[in-house]
Amino acid sequence: MSNSFGTLFRITTFGESHGPGIGVVVDGCPAGLPLTADQIQTALDRRRPGQSDLTTPRKEADRVEVQSGLFGGQTTGTPIGLFIRNEDQASHDYSHIEHAYRPSHADYTYDAKYGRRDYRGGGRSSARETAARVAAGAIAAQLLAHYGVQARSYVSQVGAVAVPVGYEQLDLGLIDTNPVRCPHPETAARMAELIRQTRDRHDTVGGLVTGVVTGVPAGLGEPVFDKLHAELGKAMLSINAVKGFEYGSGFAGTLLFGSEHNDAFYTDEAGTVRTRTNHSGGIQGGISNGQDIYFRVAFKPVATILQPQATINDQGEDITLAGKGRHDPCVLPRAVPIVDAMTNLVLADMLLRARGSRL
Image (tube, rainbow, N blue to C red; front, side):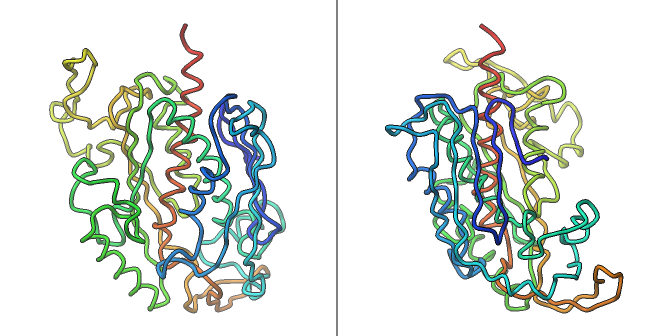
């Protein structure tokens, strides 16, 4: 249950961290969309582990295998099956937690729900599952590109080190020019140093990812339960380690008066309806208004730390546990393509739903 996401553009992921592999079935993608395995692979390469000294040293090629749904370089309209094999497993690194509950992990809650769990890397609760989402998101990105929509995200804060300006003042083309994926070079260097210092202390650090979507037409989203911002929030909160989501002015907007916060409408020279400010984050009444959509996603420090911690085992006995194996000291650099993917999946679904809402 709950392994599927979306309504018309719908994905179902499967697999575990230390099983043979992970995969996804994408259903509802229109026929005739130009698509190649290389385009999917490019997205996966941004997420894969072992890219720099700031991430886990686990080595996974994450080579995508297209099982169905493509022919002659285009989608056929049938389900698209994608599979990614697990290659660099070190299951022995997890034998010490077979009966232990790691602090802030899903070990206890999985036992409480299912009465059993795959302790090897967390099984289904592992962030390894997100590779399947990134693969599916790459397909959604191609569909959105057909309509001129582009989603990009970047690391805007690590710990207390934050980018000092908004996305409008940044060159988002610089996102992938450094291992942190921060388009503000001076801040990126400080972030990288903080991550290295944290890693050397056998600790972890969290932060923020900012997402920006441009080219969004007005009219995407549903007015009541499936509001666009609600679907984005659900998508982001489904990502491992995410603790919060805000869009537009977010919580800071509560400090403004209505006269300061309202976005005044005007018509530009081309006859397009626009707003003079964008505190709404491109969404009003749960529906896109044609302005940029922007939001922030909060990621907690990775739960696995290589330090002794007090906890209990599945018999309720007090024990001391220290993490082992290969883990990210900061999840943010590898979270960027995951945020991109989930954004693309939501917007692709909403785009297809909007096409049927009027003649």
